Length: 415
Image: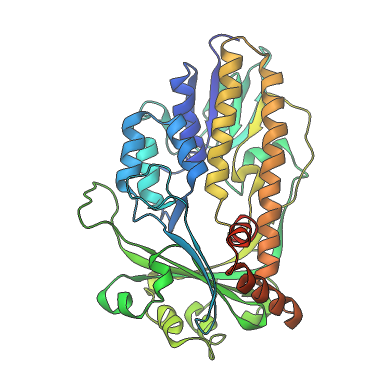
């Protein structure tokens, strides 16, 4: 189908990567974003791009953008660590790629910086201040997207890349659900000053670090710091970020339904850390008040393949997952490459566009919801209330720490 025109709803990580990939493949694409500009909304914490995500970025982005991504990222992760709440080592796994210059090494990057880099070169492609309202099929067979400001746009394919609360998904798959997991997470960040460098557990400066606590709670932490010689025009804020998660009743909540905004998130966390390491408690105590946020942890429910149309989904718009594997953005980037390839083949008239989209959806649903389930299984393992289950988890990590094969399996399935 020559002269294919694609509409993407959402200028997030997956949507912008897809737009670059389509343009490089000669496919006309327009992106519509509800935000009024790149920086008008708080971008949250950093995310970590793993090797698969980096290869997806490299595949989709112009060389200059990808080089900016590598240059703007923080120090690469050299290990993943597990401790108990008293800082007793459970498991330490070295990362396979640890060179700062290795483009495929796992590396933290500011969400805002990544979004800025992904938007470079798409100034004539992204329309801001466009809140998607609905879509419909036109008499000519195209898909028309309608926006709250009364405007509309038409194309041959519409891609919903509009996040976990996707309006595109709501219309396309009204029975698809996101459910409460019963957990609440509180997050915060501590400016990386000399005192924090001395007091924070050493593992957080090597990469993602998890602390298994009593009573079905856990905490993770990681540092964002930059090589001394590295210059960048992007965000270079240095800090330690942490997240504390527990069952909703541990926070004194009747349920974790809907939005959760704890009146005093810091006090709520510290009340559950009375017998934790003082160094971990101090991370919570010293967090910037403005950085604290709390939310109910949700997860999408797997869906079976649906009747393919010219409307499809990408990333969190379909397979939204808990944060307990840290692969949501990387899975969205995997989607972007797969969908780029599918639409490129249709644009070259090698396949019918519906057949190409059906193949994309079938594969994306498979690995996307496998990631959702793995993340959910991790969540349950890390927050088990049964003393026997908690003991078994700790025992597995300690045994894995003694075996290279088990160490790799622990990260593949549990980290």
